[in-house]
Image 1 (tube, helix red, strand yellow):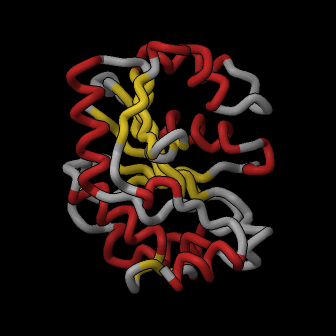
Image 2 (cartoon, one colour):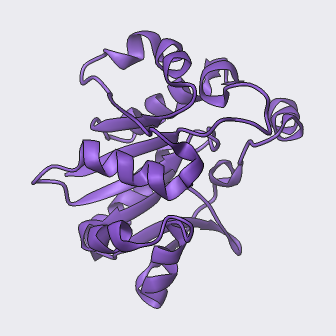
Length: 200
């Protein structure tokens, strides 16, 4: 079974407002659009990792939070420790005995497509690669799939090194999947980023 983690624990300090709850794409809060995308791709075990804006993010989800199957929630008590700390918080909440992998994406990347998610899942299922991630040209994006074999290494990696260190650890064993989806690269961190998203 593949679990999906949506990391939404950041303080949105550069944006100035909670991205997951208040910013919209295609008329939906970022977090809702991502949940819809994951479900459309066939993933129904979804855990959202929150932090500073926990209540606002839950409220933004509305009925999506309780729609069957309901999303799960995990709150990082100290998101300032870095993104890997949120990933590990999500692992603690989501990983079960039958979990074969984690698909990890960011609330900052709201424009991922269901086709891209399905393609990544298909490649991972067929290859059992330790890491699978999308690529557009030379740029890598989200989501990233971590096979179960990576879990001990993720847990042992210093927080300040981040999950990227785990990707690099596997070198050529990690699969980069070429996709025609620039949405997997659209990272909204600042008001200027959001303006460009809206204008596009």
